[in-house]
Length: 254
Image (cartoon, rainbow, N blue to C red; front, side):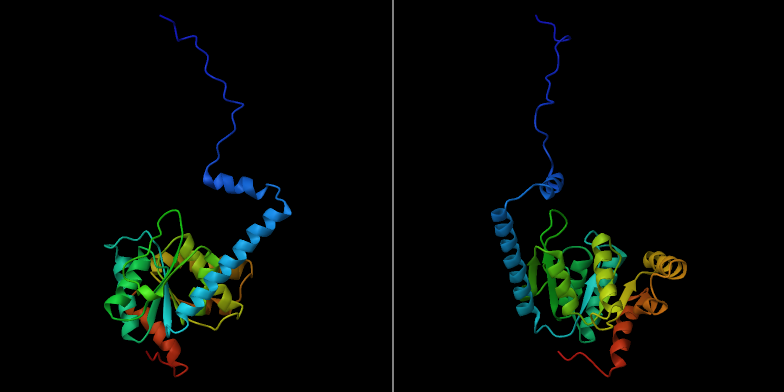
């Protein structure tokens, strides 16, 4: 019987390295492309982006006044923030607003569920992701859109919302929050209300904006802090929206 102890392992140093999907995207960014490849790829992207904008504009043009609700896809149905979101959405419909969410699970599902239970407009702006994201069953089927591009999706959130309620969430929620915050601060859109729900969750962020961005570095203006309301209850969240539109003698009408 042969002794395997002295057997040398195979030398795989000459084998090409296998990259995972995220690494492959990095490698492709440095790859030299010929003109035909650049032209065909970019043309396809342009038409895909255009098609997403056209479908979004057509489906959402007549949804009436709505409030976008942002928050984590990972929040479970028994969590207090899930239940609060469902209540907020229900109350928004009672006050005459529809609800727009990202169309997925967690906080998004809760928002659509509350709107659906109250018999109001329930919009879902979904997106293709490798994890977490699937459309929830509480979206009006004629108001469900699924995007490939985050930036197109964010345009739809902003273009068709009369206010933004931000529940606790992660990086995607922060992205959506600061998209709306920046557009309002730079006057690219109207001064629609932004409501952060959960003082314990959001106070640290707001303190950092005040002490670091404003006081220490002077990178924002004092009035920028007034663009956001921080609340703790569903009633307070809906009241911010109602009080804002009462200033202009406006009320939803669908």
